[in-house]
Image 1 (cartoon, rainbow, N blue to C red):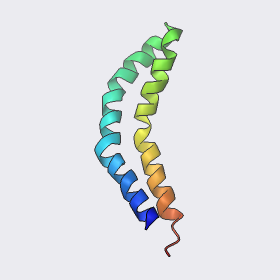
Image 2: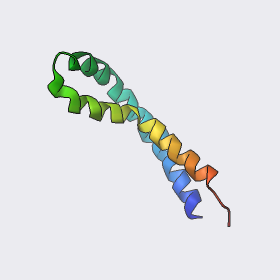
Image 3: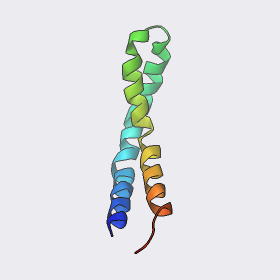
Length: 73
């Protein structure tokens, strides 16, 4: 039962939060990444925006890990 709830939680986060955050971060990441070549000090900002872009991948991977490792009891 715990795995089902955990899987539903990550699916909820994926659908309702992760795609929105990635969509918000993407235009800023494109601009910041371009200027990172000229201003190396903005690399930490670029890394944070990249993590926001990768959030849907992280959530989907968590859901699949839970589904594939599920040993129904």
